[in-house]
Length: 345
Image 1 (tube, rainbow, N blue to C red):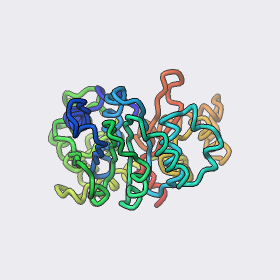
Image 2 (cartoon, rainbow, N blue to C red; image 1 turned 180 degrees about the vertical axis):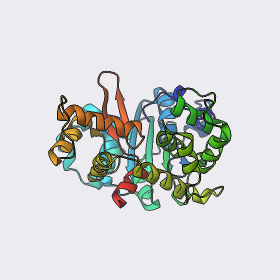
Image 3 (cartoon, rainbow, N blue to C red; image 1 turned 180 degrees about the horizontal axis):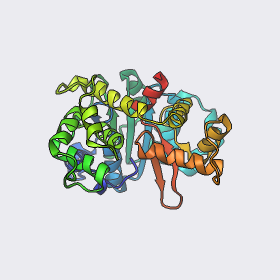
Image 4 (cartoon, rainbow, N blue to C red; image 1 turned 30 degrees about the vertical axis):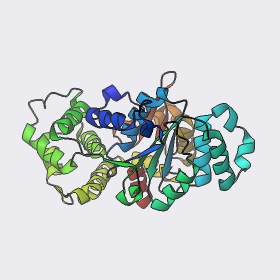
């Protein structure tokens, strides 16, 4: 989500398509109406990444903007307050707004948006009734406002102005992403790995970026024999769209079982955080230490060892590091499919 769009493999066409659908044209009267575009695709397909890239590209054309995650079990009072804070941080971080109920927050959004030209991203909606309640807060004011909503369910997008079905990565882009994660470049496998073996593994990933990155992280530094073993493992589904999610979940579980025991414990601990949480790195490491999960090592402090655990989980693509230009990786997030996996564990 936080990477520059130019560094994201395979996003170019989808980015251009969405920008074209959303770009306001002041000369076209019909374009002054608020437009809602749904981005629909299976889990792990980088809908959030795409929406963020489009948001970053177009937000300067609008007076006000917000990018708010919703998730599987949303607290709508928090969702509405998050939208308000993104729209006007100085005003709505005031503690008095935490006292408002859902109806009052919707009224506050109506009052604020009534005369504004805005661009709002509502990310990761799971149920139609959730969208029905959120859209009550969005004002149609004929100022050319735009909304992107991402979801993995077509029934959520039933009455949308426009629906954009996000496609899986092409085989070529899948290879580029796979090789970039494994070898640091997009060209080809080194001599000790055959292209046909890579193609077989990528076929199992089904063009799902999360699956490709996770599989590459699993295979990083392993022998060709290990690659063959993964290729022949049971439980994969191929060539059926409805199986993509099961396929990705299976790949994630392979990566979980490949973790050393101390990293499994630290990863499972992340199940205590709510979906879409921004988790502070230092606080998390101290919690691991307090629970006794971090091993003592000669000549190294406990926090230093815990920091290595944190970066190991990022390098294995089990958690997602959040970058800051000032602090480096200061926070992390857990992808909702990884969270589902560790909660079930």
